[in-house]
Length: 191
Image 1 (cartoon, helix red, strand yellow):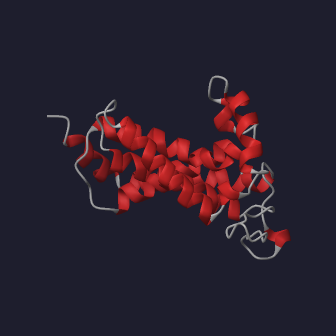
Image 2 (cartoon, rainbow, N blue to C red):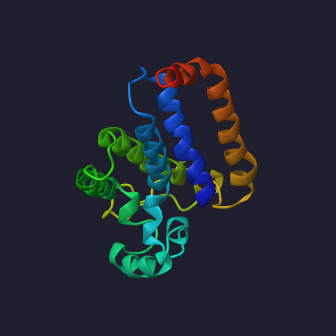
Image 3 (spheres, helix red, strand yellow):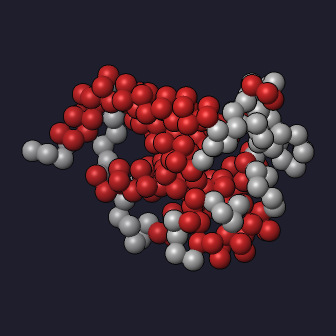
């Protein structure tokens, strides 16, 4: 999937969890940082590719991407696996623990947002022709549906005409059906 589809999928997953789970009291700052972390998490598995969207959005990102890419192996290797997910969960938790003295937000919510985005990336890539090496270092790529020819081409017509618009419509549906949840959240801060 392309970066913009991963961004939308990460936001959709976070939106779905927001509307289906009990409302927690958190600050607006935490909510904004969690949404940002969610979008970063949605692009993070592709850091093994020097031309990834995440690197293009950072100053000197292409240089950092070229340095990290050989360390992480080729595209869709460890960062797209269960082992990589555990690694990034640990590293992101470690980083957030050290940043919490600078940002006064609930880092548990931020970390949760990041991981939702990260996992949404892996789920979306399961539907591509390439699949993902979920059980890395075992060199078998898993995809859904199991028949390779039924999967989507990254950046292809299926992604652009079905997946991306489908995610947009689903977000609209979630917001329309659960607008009261958003109002409840905002009422905590607007008096």
